[in-house]
Image (tube, rainbow, N blue to C red; front, side, top):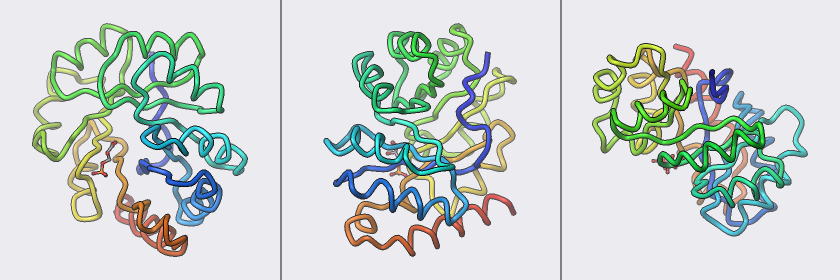
Length: 206
Ligand code: 3PG
């Protein structure tokens, strides 16, 4: 069984919203730059309402990030999240997401966690924090015993190294916050969000 999270765009932005009102212009700016998915985290109080509002933007696939508990799963599904991303591995969170019929991308950092994901029938995981774990070389080594598993690296991914990650066959998508940095959102610099997104999509396609 696949998780279905990384199917289209090679870039998954990880967003920390300070104001729910940022969700719609941000989603529009990402779409203008060719990015059609967004992971809005629960790290701030604005996250849940941001998910709700982003769902109103046609063409944007909206996910929830930093989902830590089954109760979070219930909340983000109620807000309209179409997929769920976790920083780590929790069978209880995966189970709840499945009860709701929502795609889930659990976080892993070790082979044991990949084995746990595979045991639950998953074939796609988030590798976090990718840079500190060892970057593309780490994924190359970690993926060897798991030929069917895809890894979405996050944490320390950026314009300088995204192609190195995507060059690893097991990596269909990279994830990160550089094109949606909090300062850009606070300044309402949507043009810069679009410019950085356009650059990222172009780099990923090279
Ligand atoms: C995540 O939750 O995946 C990371 O916080 C994103 O990491 P970055 O800010 O280094 O891109």
